[in-house]
Image (cartoon, rainbow, N blue to C red; front, side, top):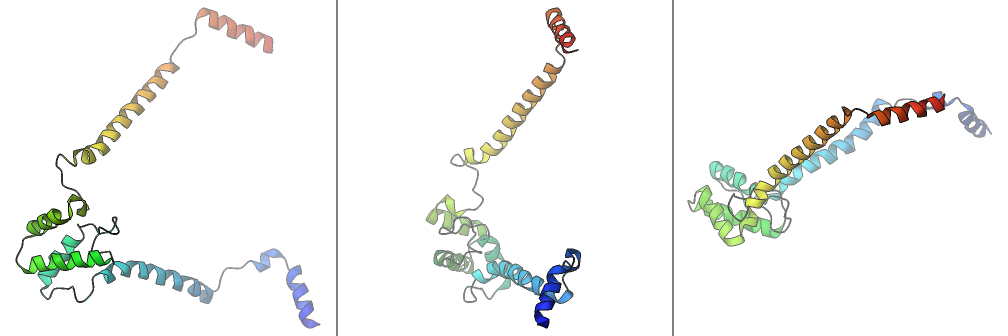
Length: 180
């Protein structure tokens, strides 16, 4: 019977007493999963490169990592091969490291991969006649949008200074007189 009385007392308590800030322990229980999720998202990219791919020379590995961040995964298409877990991305990372170990320069490696997979493998495409529209479209849209906005604001500002004709003034005065 005491339990029932406690339940009734809980429901009859004022609402402001039921609402209290979470205790430090419950805040910790909330923050821990959020922190784990955050660190899991950060660590995902680092896990894409497997230990068997990593070169023994740190300078070559740094070059390989820099180059692999510029290359698109052909499977994922919006990730670099450095971030992708796809099998093809793994194969391209291995091929890139083999070319660097063989003594190719960064430009030669990129040229080799472009010749093999096409310009689409580059996350930042080169400027040439094939990609001219791709590079020119964003500035052109910004310029056209700016000109359009300028024209609309100018037209709106010019419309504010138009004076009423004598007939319009008479009509306004007539309508105002009727209103009173």
